[in-house]
Structures are given as structure tokens and as C-alpha cells.
Amino acid sequence: MKPPVKHLAVIVDKDITGKDALSNADPRIAVDVFLFDEDNRVALLYLSNWDIHTIPGGGVEFGEDLVTAAKREILEETGCNCEILLEIGTTFESRAAHDFTQQRHYFVARVVGEKGEPHLTEAEILQGAAVHWYPIGQALEIIKETKAETYQQKYIKARNIVALTEIVENYT
Image (cartoon, rainbow, N blue to C red; front, side):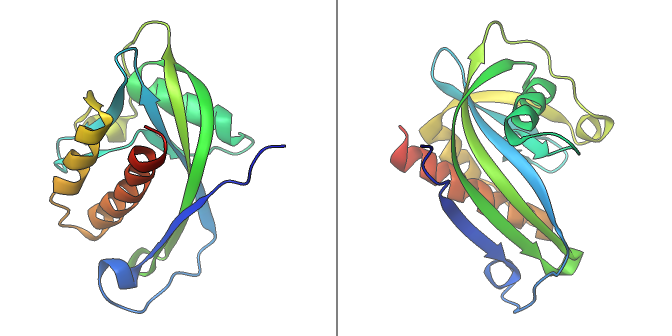
């Protein structure tokens, strides 16, 4: 029997802005993947226009299961095929100022075959997206040191720290 997925965190405006506001929107379901290469480095997506690193991933499309979405997002954002090894947990976000909620599922995966070229969306290209590979401890430090100035950047940084800390403390 598969163990239950760990709930990692709920992140709300109180954590980000100090305000007691919540969104009532239906949650967007998304996946993020800790993708490790043959040198045991993890992929981070660097968005140069925002000057922020993030974990590769994105929204689950209609009719997709979580694993299929995770593999698709990894291929699109890193150019790599992967083998999903396990799901480590979920986070839930409630962004009142954007009337947006999100449930993210976090996976650990390994690169299968050669690293390829990312297949970025136009939005990702406009954000200056590029893949960089780091030892997991360094990836956590990079995320912690990120200057998150906007509302959205603060949410991204908060969830990335929670998930990366889980990996570093329990899976490395």
C-alpha cells in the first residue's frame, strides 16, 4: 500500500503580507519536480526577468494525472525525459489579492537518457527562463537568498523553501 502524501504547508496572505485575507477560488492543481541528473544535481529554472530561481513544474492539464503532468512539465522546461521516483508532499496556497488558490504536488525524479533542449512556452521565453543544475544544498541556499519583491515572488519563494527543505532534511 502506498503511504499517504505528506502535507508540507499552507501558505496564506498572513504569511506573506501579514493580512488575514483568504481566496475562495477553486484550487489550481499543479506539480513541481525535483529532477536529479547523473551527478546528483537538481534542476532549477531561472527566470532572469524576475531574477528568481524556481523548481520546474506547472499546471496539470484537463484529463492528465499528476505523474503525466510532472513528466510533461519536466520535458518542456528542462528538455529531459525522466523517471518519477516518488511523490514527497503537497503545499496549498491562498492568494487573496489575486483571488487564487493552488495545490502543488512535489515529486522526485531522475533524468533518463541525455539532457535535451527545453521546449519553453512563449511566456517562459519572455520571462528569460533557463535551466541551471546545482547540488541540492546549494539550490536551497539560492532559493533562500532570492530577493522576492512582488506578491507572487514571495509566494513562489515561500513554497520553494518549504519543498526544498523537505528534500534536504528527509531525502538526501
